[in-house]
Image (tube, rainbow, N blue to C red; front, side, top):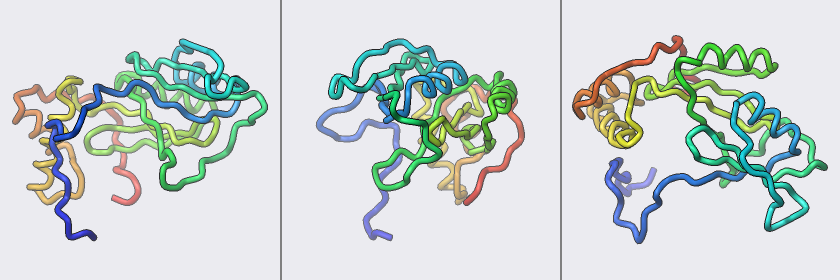
Length: 204
């Protein structure tokens, strides 16, 4: 462990030469067009909003999907690449992609994954609730729902407050009591979604 003090957790913008304004898009090396569309459009329900050549390598196709809020997920695909069974972990590799889902559709999502022959796990992660599955290339896909109603523009503030409260509590990770106390401290209503009971997951 380093003797350096841990970086502070805060919603305040750091003293940096510039600041990003949000996530525009994420691009993934994909397999082929048919398998990619079958998973992301036909199963996860993301509209395919643009198809064009990869401008850096026109032999590949660049697919653009709307993840549901105008944020874009794109893939470089080529019909000579079969889908894969798994990802190779390592520094710089993508561990997983996470997409928001409606908590009222949680049970329907699990049934749809089962109908599509996709395995999945369900975990209560304390601050949110998650379904984990894999795409056509073995990339871990998380489908996450906030456990509490949180305005998008206040999420960072709520999480940073829950972080402080869980540290004061000596807890290993943020739990319901920290989230509820954070919302109350910030003057936000405590409205919890009706989500299935689940374990926290391995390693906690």
